[in-house]
Amino acid sequence: MSDVVLRLEQVSVYCDGQPIVQDVTKDFYKGECIGIIGANGNGKTTLLKAIRQLLPYEGHIYGNGQDLAKQSDTCIAKMMSYMQQQVEIPYAFSAEEIVMTGRYAYQSWWDSESDEDRRIVQEVMAYTRVSHLKDHRLEQVSGGEKQRILLAKSLAQETDIMLLDEPTSALDKGHSDDMFRFFQHLCKQGKTIITVVHDLELAAKYCTRLLLMGEHRVIADGTPEEVLQPDYIKRAFDMDTDVFRDERYGQLRIEIIPSKGRWQGD
Image 1 (cartoon, one colour):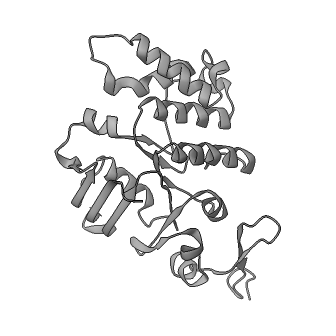
Image 2: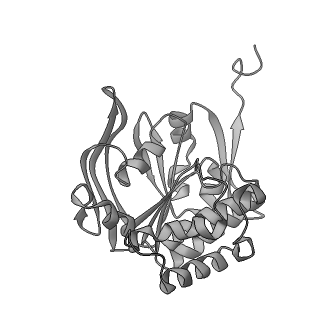
């Protein structure tokens, strides 16, 4: 792959003088599905927010060769979408109205949605299989349906880059797999997805590349096989693991080795 769509150069984020993310220098390429993994509190969500220009940071972030710190929010919204982990949306809005908000970067404040906006909204809702929910409010849909509605909203922005913060955190395994199959298909179409993932086996199954964060920095970057090594996992999560490939399904499995005295009270 040669198409760099996003570049981070020595990116650091601080809060009250304390480092949350330190010295991240990375290139991200067209068509990649990148999972950001690591223990809580090591800056995974913070890194996503910095990329989307929602937090102040040191260093430089370039999208399609443009310094994002110098771009308007509208310009950035046409370049990358951001699906938050926790989204507060008034229940009075229908699913279709929520998805339509993804078109804000293409609308003038004095204009209502165009025929083109409505066409795109219909297409992405059909793609994520929520067309039948268009008149439903969020309290009327399941957790999996809500996540697909929010994914449709991100897709309505028509961006090349999608930033997703634990999009499957509230879903069961079946719906999580379903969501990541969507991501896999989108990446095959040329989109670049950068997502925070809590489930290591899910990340190994669907992501083409993993960034493992620990000590507030990226401590490993590569394919799932390269990153999900016991030594790296021990460093990031402080737990011993046995990592092996399931011969029946050909997938990486990660088994936690109980630490004597830590859980049993010995």
